[in-house]
Length: 451
Image (cartoon, rainbow, N blue to C red):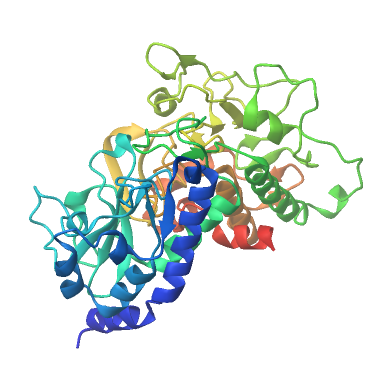
């Protein structure tokens, strides 16, 4: 037996249908209550098989599916209308539908020959219009692992090492989604009352919070950890007690709004200048240009080549949080550059180009056109929800690790190296310095925060 076959057998034996049903049903119940579906006569029944008992493909599913998956489906809740018909389609979360119908589960993609139905099924279908090629949550029937794929044509269970294919146990997905709900990144609402609908959900029952107190707290905790790591390495003569201050006070320009304003008015001001090589702490007395969104192109009007081609959401509050010293006119530095549905995502903008860089897994990437740093420390495919850039808290945690590992050194002014440090991203031997090798949400931090 090959190692891959052994891994499949091990994962199949680890599939816990009762736990998966408990987690799934909890999401169903939260969504049902938050969307007030009971007021229109809907109710919850206890079994997927009961809900779809009249579906002509149901028996084929029973015959095809492994016993643990059948057990899970026997216990998985289904929302039905007052006539007893399952709500189809319906949203489990903003970006995915509830468990698919029997017929839909068996069709990966009617135009695709890449995956046969006895290898994979679509467990939950895509629920965002902006990702029209998205398959949804795919399950491998060999080991009952799942992945969230952005393209149905990409599914390739015969090659477990194919790029960008990361498979998880179903309970991991459900557990992570519950935490997203727990911290109110996703919130069930009455249909049609959403305030933020990134990528356009097809069934609109979940609101997406671009930021909230929890997300701000995550960024502040990461900021404090980085500042402490740098401060602990300052020369002895720099260790002195100073009255606590924040980076900025209430006199910030009114144009600075939302997440950037909340962060600057809550983040402690460190006793040094450089938070990263060549990047300074935001100075409200000599602020960088406030990024301007061109209303016609929907992109930033900026001299920085990378940021000039970044699409900007309508309600984005962008800010050059850590300007590159001596390069204000180039608008270089670490930008808070919001993605749709994400107010705390960031991108690095350098005042020079680099010819190559490591991707999220450390593999070398080289484009015909040079990049100006915006790809450094960025995630690959988002495994649990719609795609987005790296979040500020994740970036700050990664920088703290570079300080703690001695890759970034410290003098009396803070982190050394200057803006030229980032040219080393072109060196394959230093790929790990500039990539994350991590998923897009730091779940350990969430567990700690919710304790």
